[in-house]
Image: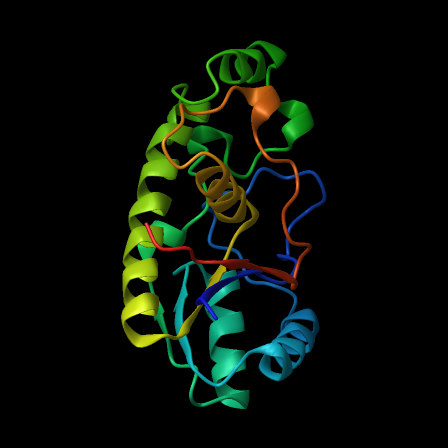
Length: 191
């Protein structure tokens, strides 16, 4: 059986509903983090290489999981961080000027929302992490665990479906991502 990538989304962050919080270093709900870690500890196989976003909400889940499964020592990887929304961070989505959001969706891959990071850069860094994970997983025949964010999961979906394709338009970008504290498991096919 080919190695798999477990894409785990952090538990709900302690943030107001409707807040843009991409790179904000927010903690996650402690009880939801414990619940997620327990379910994940039971679901994961024995041979797993683990990495996590260095943002607090992901690190909490990585440490809680490791307390339950000491074999799952996770390493931080900055490539697994959420998109940086620049000056939009910490603002309500509903408060952002419509013209700014329209500019982003018109040039979805290249526009830097809030003068933060553009999607092309995020896809590139996630692809580099994915290539490294694939190589290590195939060499050792281990599954890979990423504790990360919805945006990273969407990048992986895009990369697996369009390995050499152009970057997406806004209407093509995957909408689905794991719910808070949940995961999806995808095969890591050879390159």
